[in-house]
Amino acid sequence: MGKTISAALLVIAAAATTFGQTPPARPPAPPPYNCEPVNPNATTEARALLKTLCAVSGKGILSGQHNFPNQRSQDTDKVNGLTGKYPAIWGSDFGFTDEEDKDSIVHRDLMIEEAKKQAAAGSIIYLCWHMLRPTEDEPGKAGASWRGSVQARLTDEQWQELITSDTPLHQRWEKYMDRAAGYLKQLQDAHIPVLWRPMHENNGSFFWWGGRPGAAGTAQLYREVYARMVYVHHLDNLIWVWNQNGPAPPSEFVNYFPGQKFVDVVSYDNYRQLSDRYYYEIMALADGKPVALGEVGTPPPAEVLKAQPKWAFFMVWGGMVNERIKAVYGDAYTINRGDPIPGN
Image (tube, rainbow, N blue to C red; front, side, top):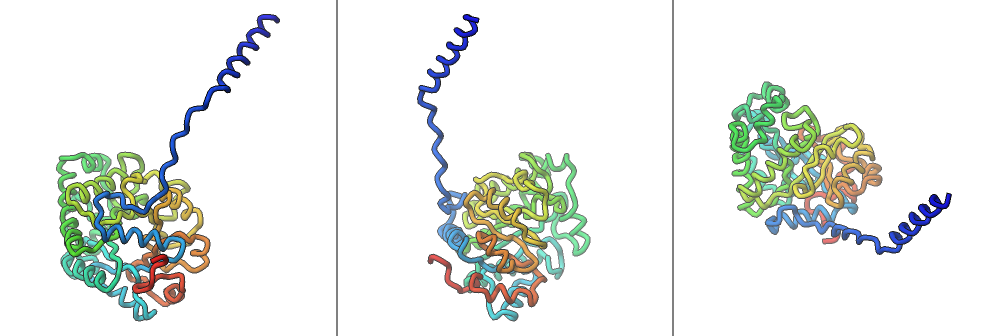
């Protein structure tokens, strides 16, 4: 019994000594987000564009309209015809088909000229790319290449080759990137910043680049895109928009996140109900950075924006402009082309 009491006293004494020590210092909290691009060499124009997104967040929402690449401004002009206003953001795509299809790559030069025209008129430029698999050559065929390539899959072996430097498939992919880079460089030379949304909806397995979670999956290819455009082509006019798709299972998005060092804007596409759950998941990943609705079928209504106020912009997809856009374009909370930016 005496030995037991002695042992207990020793434990209490040791604990008292431990409690008396100064606890180790906590690591300093990370600095608050300062609205600076992830590319430290970002152009003055790109920095100003990101500042605009930060300024509107929680105070308004920038309107946006996608236009198919071979239709240049068809949907943007339709918005103006219906509402008397132009969207703040003009969007388009690098395309993938031949001839005069709406997604044709034949007139990429005219798409870039339209981007310059829109920027001169005061529009923000927003570009994505429904890219063919790197196993095929451009251009694809209208109809056949959508499911036959853009929405087809690579085998696991092909994927591993794709993300491995200096392999034949990786080199083919680099040539694709280099083509797009040449057009983006034209915009940089014209001092036009771009909201660049590569590999969009990349949690979805319906595109060849998507649906591969984990470090060596889709996130790695996104980082490869960043490295090619920034470190090889020195495209400093890009604001990097990372994009997910819904509906999706809870907590899925984080499995595709490439890391804060590669993302300026965290965005989300949904053609159905804009549930609060997705909003908060996107907000958590953004960690203070701007969040946006990368694609929608109709603009978010006022009640959604009241519950989800941080969306910085929305982008209605091409071919979906109709009477339902009028209420949002007429709402004072919506910022259209030429409207003042809050805080500016």
